[in-house]
Image (cartoon, rainbow, N blue to C red):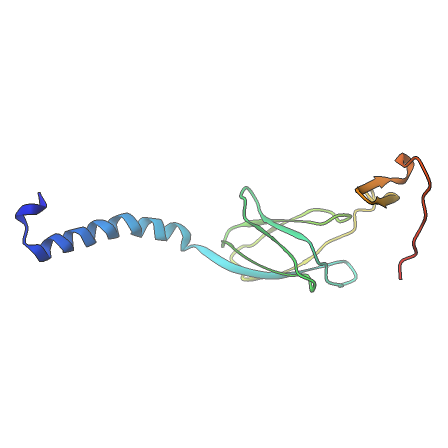
Length: 136
């Protein structure tokens, strides 16, 4: 078909076909925004290491030492924010570009936990000597 078209028209046709293929692919990701935020505890101290995930996707990040995060997500995304010892929270972005989230302590889940060399265990499950190290 293209062998009957002049040389320059052939390239114009190729360019048009390329645009027809790539344009829809680019618009799928055009709605993603960079959303930044900070996650704090109830006493307003920053929480490092908090998991921030976009609900029903594999996109996620973790807060830095100041409790801050940055993630690319759709404007209508819902974030699932979780941290050990805190209640998991779902936050609707609603087109916002910055978020401030305060996590509440989950007092029902805070039992005595023993940290061992290979993980954590409940104090009642440990069979052997246990030493306490005071927090500074």
